[in-house]
Amino acid sequence: MIIPMTKYSLLIYHREYEDFLDKLRELGVVHIMEKETEITEEIRDKYQYIDRIDKAIRFLKKREQVPGSLAGELSGSDAYDEINRLQSQREDNLNRINNLRKAINELGPWGNFSPEKIDMLRKEGVNLRFFVSPSRTYDPDWKEQYTIEEINIQGGQVYFVAISHNGEEIDIPAEEVKLPSRSLASLKEERAVINSKLETIENRFDEIARNDLPALDLYKNSLLEDLEYEKVIHNTSREVEDHLMIIEGWVPQGSIEELNQFLNSSDVAYITSEPKEGDKVPVLLKNKSFAQKFEKIGELYSLPNYSEVDITPFFAPFYALFFGFCLGDIGYGILLAVGAIIARSKVQKEVKPIAVLVSYLGLATIFFGLISGVFFGINLYQTDLPGYQQISAMLAERDTDINMLLFYLALVLGAVQIIFGMVIKSVNETIQMGWKYAIGTYGWLTLVVGSLLVYLVSVATGITMETLRPVLYLVLIVSGVMILFLNNLNRNVFTNFGLGLWNSYNMATGLLGDLLSYIRLFALGISSAILGLVFNTMAVAMSGSIPVLSVIIMIIILVLGHSINLFMSGLGSFVHPLRLTFVEFYKNAGFAGGGRRYDPFRKIN
Image (cartoon, rainbow, N blue to C red; front, top):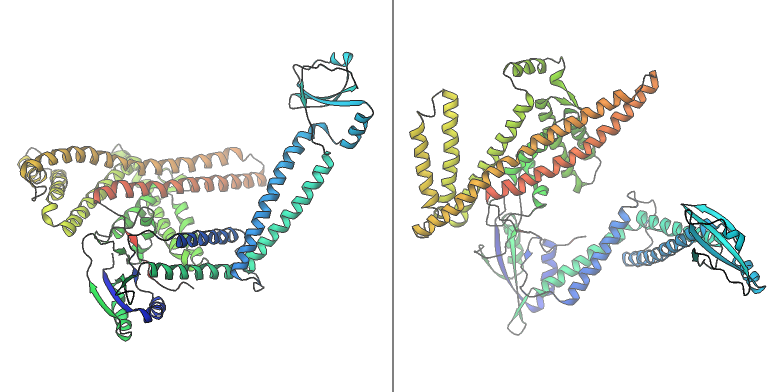
């Protein structure tokens, strides 16, 4: 759910302003409203500086996560300056290494020679010219005309040297190359020196990461606090010749009493008001344990608008089911669930909700694995296991199998989610604009649900559709009137009819396309099971017949193959339910989004 917000307008005397801001930041409950004006260049520069510090912190965290035993000797600003200096040196040395690599590659085919001796020969009137020719065009008869020494044949190229004396003309149809004025040995020696410098720089990065990361984090957070302080000042209105300061902000319902006590003790004048249409109200979500873990999933798309219903609790169970449907393997589900439970006790506090989320997804995978009968790629319906054997025989008697049932189950789940989304849309429209604007959506609900109920009654009771035709006609008439003529009671009937026809076309084509999109659940589940079966078959076929070695080879193939399958199928199982949620479900639920996160003015360190 979205926590209700209250707008506060605070009036502060200018002499008490800075002291009041310090206390307000300590309280940390007011989300300051920003002015429509652009932020200053100074604030923008500070944002960019903090962003660079944040990148430096992320760079160090990738290198060394274990804190060192020594306390850091550097302050946060000194640590950042040294990181900048080291990164600059590192970049320069890497560029030099690249240039040396190119020169060494050019000199490699020629071997090690002394440029000094070549210069001495040139002074004595003996010139050495270096040529490269493709093997197919190289002519050995050139040796009869000139003094030529072949140096190397590599990559289909012939590397040779033509020796001449002063005044002697050489005309060879080959590419002449100009070599660096340094020997191969000296280039390699310089490369070794630079690599040693790079190693020293890398070791220093590791040392800073072990000992000075806390100071760097503290420095970044202190700069953020100062910046937020400046933003509050920037968003403060000044009245009565700058003697009175006015701050406006939003406070969640649970913090109102605490803020009121603080304001009353501070002798600050304040006015409260409820959000109005058009207000940019921040969004603070509060859901129960299960749905709360899926808030991160919803934020990948957008936070809900303050005025609409938070649909996180509504898509959460569907997302878990869809993930389990796509992966659908008991063994993979056990690995995910157990791995997440173990990780939960070891990871940082911020990451624990993600570990819990993965454990939920693992349980959903086990559930659908039991239904589909797949365990590490093994089809349990083709084994003698009790239950699966009987179910398989029963399905065969009815000329079907589990895969066909899973296909229909994917469509049923899709239909349920689409209808559920339409219910949420009607509720959203009723809350935001009133029931007069939601009649069209109610009409579509009546049409879809009513027609479905008539069909289900016919199937369950044996009553023919011919007998139930009057009831179906009644559903069509009632829903048709709501969709075509009453979709918005604030418009005239002709406008409603025209827009109703257009919406009917969009809904008719859209609903069918949306429903068919859910077939991907079945397709991904089948592909995961088949790929697991392929790796099992490969492990048996390629293991050979040597007693101990065969088992080792089989285990290696199984571990590698199922690791690949778990990664690829797990990625698909994460992404495709996202698409079904953000496209099909959000569209049918009328999700607007665009909410801004509640971010109170508070101390960070």
